[in-house]
Length: 374
Image (cartoon, rainbow, N blue to C red; front, side, top):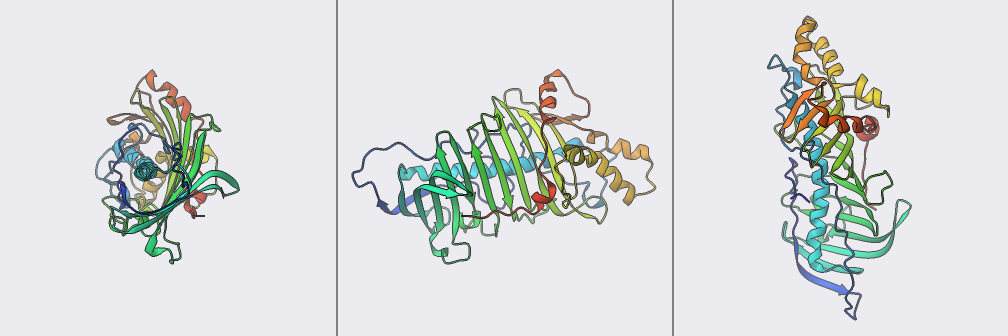
């Protein structure tokens, strides 16, 4: 697995949990039992389609600085959104890795002091827990001890999982995990649905959901994201990704606000190649139709309409030249965007074929996404 990626969140993504204070051992005979924590809870996404570099956003708020819109400026945002989703799943794995120091191989209750914010955290593991109509082998809950009387119960993380095959749900609130580095995380909540049971035909897949995301620095987040929903499925070395992110305050050339960045992508770790298609449907669009999301609301279509509205006297040939890199799909390697529309070679053919079967999530459902603990 890759090392934990640095993503442009106002959240610290490295969690090390140490310094056990109290443990209530409900295995008094101290019998050796196998590890019950899942070893994996994330899908590693190829760098060709997951990149935490942040675009400058020159086409935002009506600015057109050059004669041609650089392809990287379009697709760096896509790589950013995917990287944020992958970073959320990496965070879950890092926490699970950190609490392995407590040798959790059975139901247990303990309190520890977090190295990150020097606050007491309570950890409870129970067997046979029901969540959303399904019974899981285990449930792990971590709370910020001094915040358990708050409305949110001080809940920092809950994981529900089965051990064979590994599948489960992890929900975490960064603010309650680390009050020092994540002090401005507010009500942001992550959820990871992970499975190795092949119900979608993948070796492993995850669904990443993020709600109430707060990223106010325009240099970090020019689109003011609020929610993200992303699916990532791994087959061999190839990963298919689709989803969207909601940007209620974003503008494209005009004063009209509110759109989703809808996307489908496929990348190969071995070859370092990637293919992606992006749409910009309105945030209030209630549709699951791939053609509506990615063709009717393609980057080129939406930008053309926005430019014509903002600059009605622009000659069409100038607009066409400016948007030449918005032709779908976009082709990538590990160095970034190569070109749009026309394939650079047959090496990308399989990936092009794969994205034809992928459809982003419903924009309205993503815009209204809410995540809650049990």
